[in-house]
Figure 1 (tube, rainbow, N blue to C red):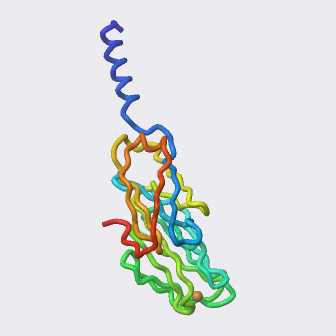
Figure 2 (figure 1 turned 90 degrees about the vertical axis):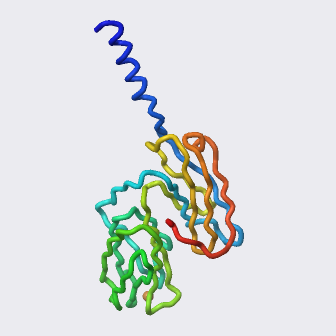
Figure 3 (figure 1 turned 90 degrees about the horizontal axis):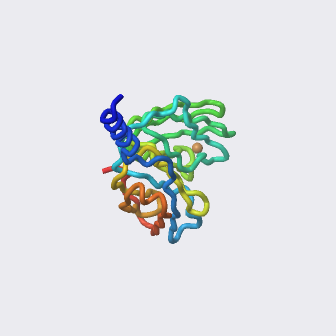
Length: 207
Ligand SMILES: [Cu+2]
């Protein structure tokens, strides 16, 4: 190999290794929610990313126990299957009237389960026809860049592999108005995002 060739290969190698991809990092921050007892279960998600996602083979579980849906908020990638087992002592009738996915299992007994595939992004509000206090949310996402806040409002999203550039960080919670924050990667991974939210009617996930 002559020196000219070595130089060209060297340049190609340099270009390949500096394609401006966020190597490995977490986009983290804290959400403060005015008028909410705890700032947990708030969805924080990135948009303007490539919308490619591989749903897991295994089904997610949205349990029914003690007249409660568990978890209260379930975030899943588009195309995922969710099982709705009745692990309670009484019958339940789980249904959704949401545009993202409409279904109604009818009344079913303890020990029985139903499966649903969520093939469209958006919000699904779950209810039980027998117990009006039962409510939960399934949030169906277009990409895998999302997180739910913990009890203190902390979140972190793995942005590994995302190209350098501008993105939007959005939030959703059933009792809070939506928010959006423009940010730039990779700069944003080195600083904590602080998001202040207020009570109000939320909007949709995707327009
Ligand atoms: Cu019920």
